[in-house]
Image 1 (tube, rainbow, N blue to C red):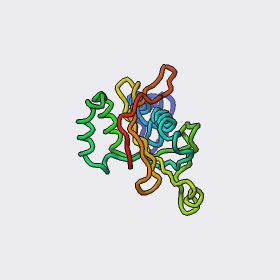
Image 2 (cartoon, rainbow, N blue to C red; image 1 turned 30 degrees about the vertical axis):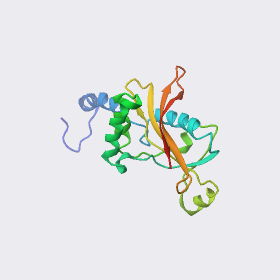
Image 3 (cartoon, rainbow, N blue to C red; image 1 turned 180 degrees about the horizontal axis):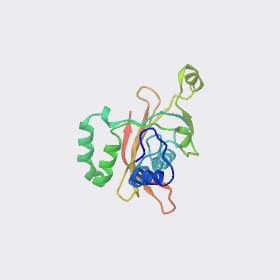
Image 4 (spheres, helix red, strand yellow; image 1 turned 120 degrees about the vertical axis):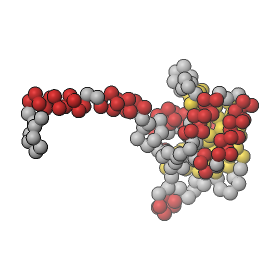
Length: 196
């Protein structure tokens, strides 16, 4: 081995690199394959969110301000999780989709309104500061999304979409979404309505 502070040349450099990097490369590849997108949410979630917004929001709201992060079940307490688990059979949901939904919604992630592909609703980014508030003052409706929970095959997703227009105004739904053969998502059914 070369003494400390010395430069390593030729075969010695190759030997050190092979010893150091070869075992690490499969680990880096596995982490990259499993890691979420930079903002903490999977690309499939944006597709599910977009389809859910088109389905649930477009009928009543031509424009909404998108909350800059998802809601979190941790604010609702473990009671909500127990209720969801108890209700899943009545709702006809698989255990894995409910568990995935609960686990994902234990922490918030950022939502980038620019990545949502929605045609029928004008999506505005959450206002930043006084200037942003003034720019979006005409639009009172605030869109809040949950994380999506997926079944094991990635064919179905459970997601909640709510719109709040102030006070007791607004509503939403928890939707079961289904992936079509062409890769697009569509609403399979409403699992539960949310009324303010």
